[in-house]
Image 1 (cartoon, helix red, strand yellow):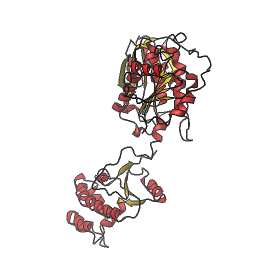
Image 2 (cartoon, rainbow, N blue to C red; image 1 turned 180 degrees about the horizontal axis):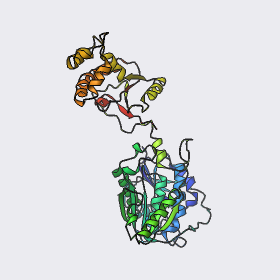
Image 3 (tube, helix red, strand yellow; image 1 turned 180 degrees about the vertical axis):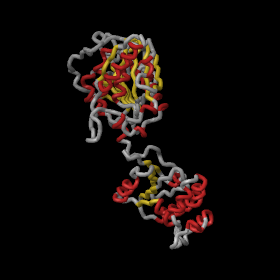
Image 4 (spheres, rainbow, N blue to C red; image 1 turned 30 degrees about the horizontal axis):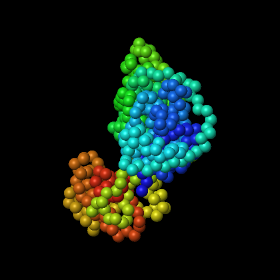
Length: 448
């Protein structure tokens, strides 16, 4: 059984790629990374060279970039507290450490003292791994960009499904702050122009994800995560802010922030621009940079919620409910699913059959709506019936009360007799009629 959470102790960041490539298959969920000068030294890294935390900027970014290539699927988190506060006594993480990994060999006594005295949240009898790399690394140099510390840094974004690019931005804000970090997370009203915005996580989930990451990686700062309803958020009115973190794609937004602050006689913000990293293995339709849009696109075709045991749903076949508005593209998807080997039950066509003479709904509909709806050939005139029910919600409900239970009965009968592995129920009213209770999963199709 793979350990859920591991801590990697890094003495040589320039060789981290050779270590990460070996770790990918050793950890299930979370990999913490801590830079150390030595086991018996402080929890810092080359403190004589890196005299302030912003000087770690390029190293942190390169670690995340390498992790994106070698640790796909792992939640990688570079710990920052020890880099910012040299007097930190212990490594603190929200998740319990189940495995400790070193990038160089240490003797058993050194390792024992380290595990006992330097890690606060660790399982008993925690296993140890060592992946050595070439220790003759190039001389590490601090970043040549702005290394100034600011009291209050700020940034904003959607932060949907927290990914590597988000972690770099948040880490930059933490590295460059001596006191407080404010993060603005966009509310739903700002999502409409984004790719597959319908799949964006709820606001509460996104806020909690940002807060949890910052607390986990740098808990010593005052962390303020707030919802925002416009691109400027709290930068529009907060005079205590002094540094704005932006991505290279949002440089114009940073200029706009200072234009508004100038109009309001607020101190202008220094701006630090972060170059986001490339997606390691993009598909032709995906963005070049790591992004939430790509994450959402990769969710297409996956089951977002696990199926639940339900007495109304047979174990076989697997039943998919396909719904969506008029002209949303359901029929095209149904045809494609047929080609792939699924049986498709079109509930509109089922309803047409149930209207015919001799079927149970025929007499019930005539009893409710009268003989005026009968055509010359004896069948129900759907145009006449439609002119009645679509002008009155009450009349439409009467029809639905007759036809919907009959459709459900007929569809379930067909499912039970089906020899297919997958059956698709296509219905625009699937959710309104509460037929999702007969499906293992429901897919709503929206034309893009």
